[in-house]
Length: 191
Image 1 (spheres, rainbow, N blue to C red):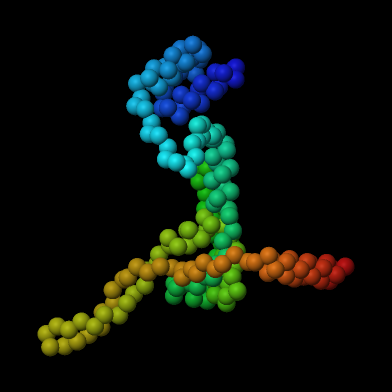
Image 2: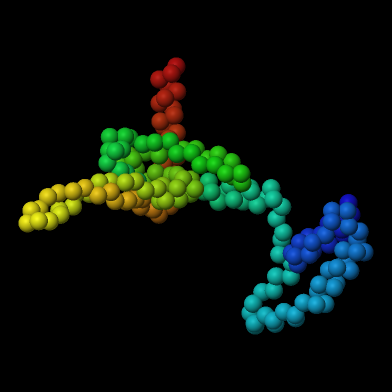
């Protein structure tokens, strides 16, 4: 397939023109010209504004790579589990998947371990923010001159998540040094 035809197809896609996969160059060029002629003239850009003549059109694979990169970007967080049923659980494995990014799986610790911050992929943090759990709350009810306690279910957020500032360059160097020392110690123990 010629480069000119590829270029015309990208332009047709951005203009919303439908075409068959085996369309000829002349026919596609005519459709684009017809669409451009019928379109209203665009507004003039204001002084100082940059003009983006042709925005890059990403392929499906490129879009999926970008989505995966955005989803796996590490976020530094502090996590507290608010679910009373998981009070004694040190953490859990969270797995998320879809057709665009594949599977992202990570162990998420709760509580004191994350006090100084814990790095998790952004998609895992978003999932934790969405999660809710049901707790039973005591409610005092009065009726017929008597008061008695009843319980009603209430939805609450399962996790309290504090997003922390990213580590500074100095903190990253110190962390790398601590990890290198820990690996050195671990390899010395194995020998």
